[in-house]
Image (cartoon, rainbow, N blue to C red; front, side, top):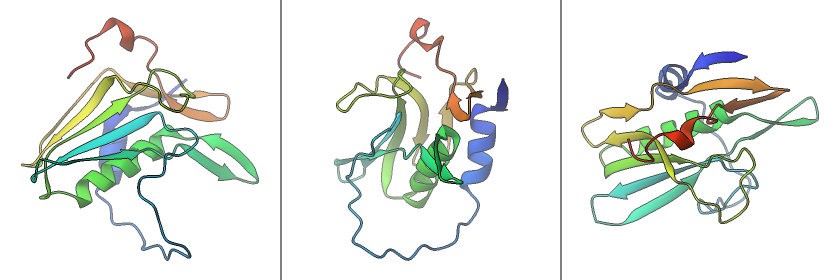
Length: 147
Protein backbone atom coordinates (compact mmCIF):
# COMPACT_ATOMS: atom_id res chain seq x y z
CA UNK A 1 0.00 0.00 0.00
CA UNK A 2 1.53 3.31 -1.08
CA UNK A 3 1.15 6.02 1.53
CA UNK A 4 2.96 9.03 0.08
CA UNK A 5 5.14 10.34 -2.67
CA UNK A 6 8.74 10.14 -1.57
CA UNK A 7 10.17 13.61 -1.23
CA UNK A 8 6.97 15.62 -1.56
CA UNK A 9 6.19 14.67 2.02
CA UNK A 10 9.70 14.59 3.46
CA UNK A 11 10.68 17.94 1.97
CA UNK A 12 7.47 19.64 3.02
CA UNK A 13 8.09 18.53 6.61
CA UNK A 14 11.81 19.16 7.01
CA UNK A 15 11.59 22.94 6.70
CA UNK A 16 9.18 23.25 9.64
CA UNK A 17 10.72 24.37 12.89
CA UNK A 18 10.97 21.64 15.52
CA UNK A 19 10.90 21.99 19.27
CA UNK A 20 14.31 22.11 20.97
CA UNK A 21 15.40 18.99 22.79
CA UNK A 22 17.24 18.91 26.09
CA UNK A 23 19.84 16.17 26.13
CA UNK A 24 20.56 14.44 29.43
CA UNK A 25 23.84 13.00 28.21
CA UNK A 26 26.50 13.99 25.75
CA UNK A 27 25.50 13.20 22.18
CA UNK A 28 27.94 11.42 19.90
CA UNK A 29 26.93 12.37 16.36
CA UNK A 30 29.00 9.53 14.88
CA UNK A 31 27.03 6.73 16.54
CA UNK A 32 25.67 4.25 14.02
CA UNK A 33 22.12 3.25 14.95
CA UNK A 34 21.12 -0.45 14.94
CA UNK A 35 19.06 -0.03 11.76
CA UNK A 36 20.12 2.73 9.38
CA UNK A 37 18.94 2.29 5.82
CA UNK A 38 20.03 5.77 4.77
CA UNK A 39 23.23 7.73 5.11
CA UNK A 40 23.78 11.43 4.43
CA UNK A 41 27.24 12.48 3.36
CA UNK A 42 27.86 16.20 3.64
CA UNK A 43 30.86 17.54 1.73
CA UNK A 44 31.93 20.66 3.58
CA UNK A 45 33.53 23.76 2.08
CA UNK A 46 36.82 22.98 3.86
CA UNK A 47 37.12 19.77 1.76
CA UNK A 48 36.12 17.46 4.63
CA UNK A 49 33.14 15.13 4.69
CA UNK A 50 30.74 14.19 7.48
CA UNK A 51 28.56 11.07 7.60
CA UNK A 52 25.18 10.94 9.32
CA UNK A 53 22.91 7.90 9.53
CA UNK A 54 19.13 7.80 9.64
CA UNK A 55 17.41 6.71 12.83
CA UNK A 56 14.62 4.54 11.44
CA UNK A 57 13.34 2.87 14.62
CA UNK A 58 10.47 4.47 16.48
CA UNK A 59 8.58 3.34 19.57
CA UNK A 60 4.84 3.60 20.03
CA UNK A 61 2.77 1.97 22.77
CA UNK A 62 5.74 -0.13 23.87
CA UNK A 63 6.27 -1.56 20.38
CA UNK A 64 9.19 -0.78 18.07
CA UNK A 65 8.54 0.01 14.41
CA UNK A 66 10.62 0.95 11.38
CA UNK A 67 9.63 4.44 10.19
CA UNK A 68 11.91 5.38 7.31
CA UNK A 69 9.90 8.45 6.37
CA UNK A 70 10.72 10.05 9.72
CA UNK A 71 14.36 8.97 9.37
CA UNK A 72 14.70 10.65 5.97
CA UNK A 73 12.88 13.77 7.18
CA UNK A 74 15.39 14.06 10.04
CA UNK A 75 18.31 13.74 7.62
CA UNK A 76 16.77 16.47 5.46
CA UNK A 77 16.37 18.70 8.53
CA UNK A 78 20.01 18.15 9.39
CA UNK A 79 21.07 19.10 5.87
CA UNK A 80 18.85 22.19 6.04
CA UNK A 81 20.48 23.24 9.35
CA UNK A 82 23.94 22.89 7.76
CA UNK A 83 22.96 25.06 4.77
CA UNK A 84 25.81 27.45 3.97
CA UNK A 85 28.47 25.14 5.44
CA UNK A 86 28.62 22.59 2.63
CA UNK A 87 29.19 22.31 -1.11
CA UNK A 88 27.08 19.19 -1.66
CA UNK A 89 25.05 16.82 0.49
CA UNK A 90 23.93 13.40 -0.75
CA UNK A 91 21.54 10.90 0.84
CA UNK A 92 22.45 7.31 -0.01
CA UNK A 93 20.27 4.23 0.46
CA UNK A 94 20.92 0.57 1.13
CA UNK A 95 18.57 -1.79 -0.68
CA UNK A 96 18.17 -4.07 2.37
CA UNK A 97 15.43 -3.13 4.83
CA UNK A 98 17.62 -4.24 7.73
CA UNK A 99 21.19 -3.55 6.60
CA UNK A 100 23.99 -5.21 8.51
CA UNK A 101 26.73 -3.04 10.05
CA UNK A 102 29.30 -2.08 7.42
CA UNK A 103 26.77 -2.48 4.59
CA UNK A 104 27.15 -0.59 1.33
CA UNK A 105 25.12 2.54 0.81
CA UNK A 106 25.25 2.52 -2.98
CA UNK A 107 22.21 4.31 -4.35
CA UNK A 108 21.86 8.09 -4.38
CA UNK A 109 18.28 9.07 -3.62
CA UNK A 110 18.72 12.82 -3.06
CA UNK A 111 21.39 15.41 -3.76
CA UNK A 112 21.42 18.91 -2.26
CA UNK A 113 23.64 21.77 -3.44
CA UNK A 114 24.90 24.84 -1.62
CA UNK A 115 22.55 27.16 -3.53
CA UNK A 116 19.50 25.49 -1.89
CA UNK A 117 18.53 23.33 -4.89
CA UNK A 118 18.07 19.57 -4.82
CA UNK A 119 17.50 16.60 -7.09
CA UNK A 120 15.66 13.41 -6.13
CA UNK A 121 14.53 10.13 -7.58
CA UNK A 122 10.91 10.81 -8.48
CA UNK A 123 9.76 7.21 -8.73
CA UNK A 124 10.18 6.26 -5.06
CA UNK A 125 7.28 5.91 -2.63
CA UNK A 126 6.85 4.97 0.99
CA UNK A 127 4.84 1.80 1.57
CA UNK A 128 3.44 0.02 4.59
CA UNK A 129 4.69 -3.51 5.20
CA UNK A 130 2.91 -4.71 8.28
CA UNK A 131 3.29 -1.88 10.78
CA UNK A 132 6.51 -0.58 9.22
CA UNK A 133 6.73 2.46 6.93
CA UNK A 134 9.54 1.80 4.47
CA UNK A 135 10.79 3.23 1.20
CA UNK A 136 10.01 0.95 -1.72
CA UNK A 137 13.41 0.24 -3.28
CA UNK A 138 12.51 -3.09 -4.90
CA UNK A 139 13.19 -1.91 -8.47
CA UNK A 140 16.15 0.38 -7.79
CA UNK A 141 18.77 -2.28 -8.74
CA UNK A 142 17.70 -1.89 -12.38
CA UNK A 143 18.56 1.81 -12.35
CA UNK A 144 21.75 3.84 -12.14
CA UNK A 145 23.30 4.21 -8.71
CA UNK A 146 23.93 7.92 -9.31
CA UNK A 147 21.35 10.67 -9.74
